Length: 246
View 1: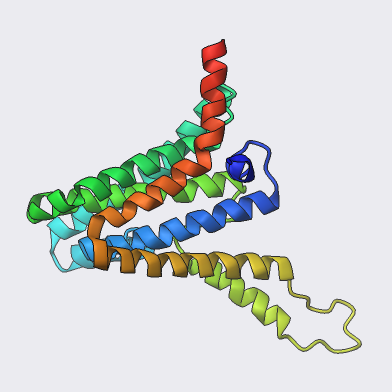
View 2 (view 1 turned 180 degrees about the horizontal axis):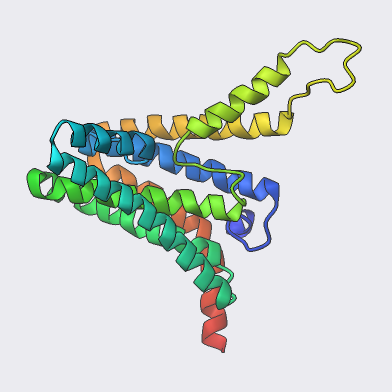
């Protein structure tokens, strides 16, 4: 049952495996980001906007909001750092699930958000900033996973870079070369396909997250957590059996 998804988080990587994992994570990121916006009124993967808001609030004298934005930025950074720690620790122990450890943590945090989000919303003033920090940490955690696995070829929690790269390749594709040009401009069709697929997965995930949160609320993140656990379940079980046999 788990054989088809074993390669998603295995240590032996291929570009195809990276794209499959990146597509799933882009879907999860889109769903979490869109659903999170409906929950907390803020996109939590957009660190460019977050840093700009800190600057704006400082100039406007809104120090509390500036501090909140800075803490959210640090949470994203800490999430990325945590991924590096977990993956390197797993590698040192020669765990088959080394790349999956951050996804396990992300799944658990999504479960916390999904199962206790309704309770959090009742304490809006106190808990809302904590919820934003939690979602920013999750986004940093996830983005660093595929970035580290693919050696920075694929990112999943924000699409600015993806759209930029897509635009570059489309520009090359539509460029009219002269017949005598010794070095004609050629688009990298594989990169074009990869970027388009990741953007589409993020968008579809955003639709799913927004629809899910609108109609069933916080609990809509539970299937996302289950999906992440499914990706890492087989290598994690392999590690568990190996540790028991040792």
